[in-house]
Image 1: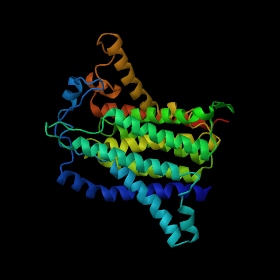
Image 2: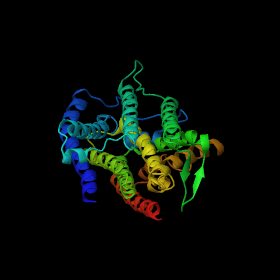
Image 3: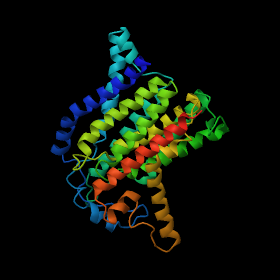
Length: 357
């Protein structure tokens, strides 16, 4: 037990330290190259204007760099690969026990972390590059969703064909057999989690929520004796906390797509890894543990349907939901702190449900 605890917490601490060390280097690069949006504001999903959002964020979006999520995945990868290399170069008992890169637990989530991060990085780069008509670009929502869907289908296929997973756990000891439909179900869950990534819109909000979610799944994996997976989740938590140290108001940089895409796609894999494979209920408790992400997505869907079916009438002043709270007068820090509180409470509730046998 003590060895397992060390295996989880030492890499997490190392990831935090590495992130803190790397941040000044990244910050200097981002500011010297002015890697931020050149024009504030955004376009609604339906193609219209977003005047309330633009008014709330007109002074935040310009002058603060994007791509801060690089700290999260670079720190995580350096620690994961570094401990693996150390175990190969210095194969003594302590280094061998700290190595948690394994084919059956961490290869797949590591690959999705890298792929999601690189695709998100490309989108961020395009978003901050001014075109000739002075409008920032970025990959369209359809293109990003297509990429996420492909990643989800590939990961789902790996689970189905390589790991023989064709069902998901339900409450109690029951399971829901899906057969070949497990693959598109995996993709749908991945896309749903990715859509919750728009929670990245207020200083410190996304970082805190993702740290809470990954900490909960680290606990679930540890309880299910998936120690390598628990260490992987803990490393991500440590890296997020390093990012969060510099992202709390006023943010030095934003997580943006390179962070949110990597974290949401990888979270889908982690949730499925702690399900049938871990003899747990990782998918069943996902909507509970990730409730802030679910509410974020739901608020956008409700807003779009309301405007379409009620001739332009809105449910919220602005969507996603956290921006609605800003619009009614809540200070940004109050929105962030209250989301953290809600996130912690539901993460604990999800842990309880996951651990009940």
